[in-house]
Length: 143
Image 1 (tube, rainbow, N blue to C red):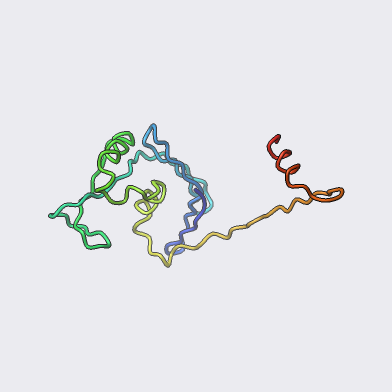
Image 2 (image 1 turned 90 degrees about the vertical axis):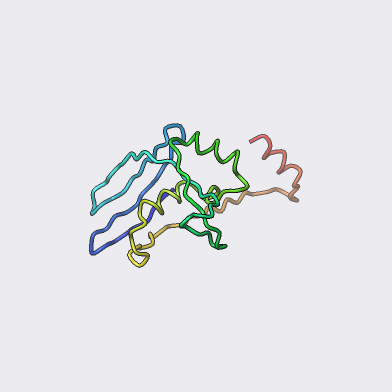
């Protein structure tokens, strides 16, 4: 997962890359803070929400829920297997869940979208005579 620039009162942080290691329950985060590259290892485990009549958080449907936290990614996965039909936020990508938690106090208007470059390659080949798709498919299978 790559790239976003966040500026608050003139101080800019660029989120450069992120990797989540499920075996160690650890996030590897690469940022650039005022021109200096920063690398962090952060112990973190995804969480879910489950219905709770006394919950202080509500889903978009208005269902009260409580946050369920875990000690390891393995525990999180095991919980999902047994409760998958009755929990929320379990299908959110864990990297997005981490970033929304890590940068939650940054106002949206302070986030500057990265300038991305997109490239495409158009490969053309010379064909003698009529193009035979059966020959093309045979060549692709050999590759």
